Image (cartoon, rainbow, N blue to C red; front, side, top):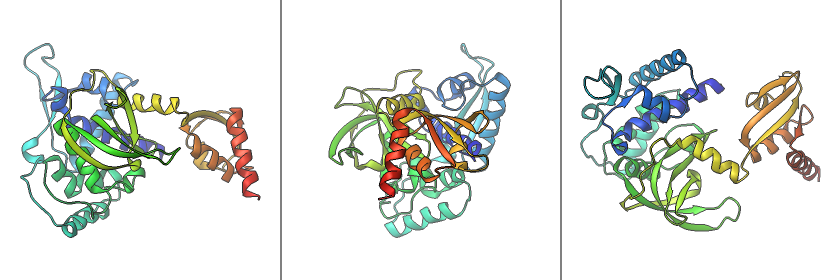
Length: 321
C-alpha cells in the first residue's frame, strides 16, 4: 500500500510540474530538472530514476495526460531527452456547466477509475480546469478518494489550480487547528503538495513575508486578487519545505514503538523494523501517532520520545473515564 501511495504522490507532483512549467520559465522539462525539482525522484540511482520516470510517464499517458518526448538539438542541454505537455490536446475552449452538470462530471471521474490517479487525471473537470473553463463547481463531487482531496470542494480546487497555472496572488480564510480562529491570509501560490494523505497549499505568505504552508481542508473563500510578485526560488523542494514547517510546528515527530508481530499493521506500515518487533517511525503526524498507538495498545507500545508516551497514557486514561 505504501509503495502505491508513494507512486501516486510522485505522479501528482510530476503532473503539477508539467502544468506549471511556464511559470518556471520553461517550455519543457529535462530529466536532470525533474530529478532535482520533482519530489519523489531525488536520492535515486541513475537506473532507478530512469525506470521510475519511464513508468510514471507511461502511467500518466495511459490515463489521458498527453506528454510529448523529444531530443533537444541546441543549447547546453543538446542531446538530452525532454518532455512537455501538449497543451493543444490537453486544454479545451472555455465552456460553462450548471452545478448539476459539474456534479455529474465529478462523480463520473470518481467512479470511472478505482485508482486515485486515474480519477485525478481523467476526471473531466480536472482537464477543464487546466484549460481555464469558467463554471460553478461548488456542488460537484470531490476529486478523488485520497486523503484531504475528499473534503476539498471542486470550486476551491479549481481556483487554486487556475491561480497556480496563471501566476495569480490569492487570498483565503484560514482556520487554525489550535485556536479555531479564522484569519484572512494572502499568498503568492507555488503549489499543492501531498504529504501523508494530507494536501498543503504552499507559497509566499505576504502577511508573514516568508514561505508558508496551509492544510487545504482548513482554507475557504479562495479568491484570485492579482498577479504574484514572489516567484518560487529556483531549486526549491516544496515537499521538504512542507516537512520542515510541520516539524517546526511539532506536527511531525519521530518515534520508536514495540509492535507485536502481525498486529497494528497501520503503524508498522509507516515505519522500519530496526530490531525484532521494534519499529522506527520518522516524520509521522503527532496526533495520528498518539491516537493510533492508543487504539492498538497493548499490541503497540510507544517507547520514545517520552512526550508521546505521556500523551498516549493520558489518552488511554481519559478513555477509561
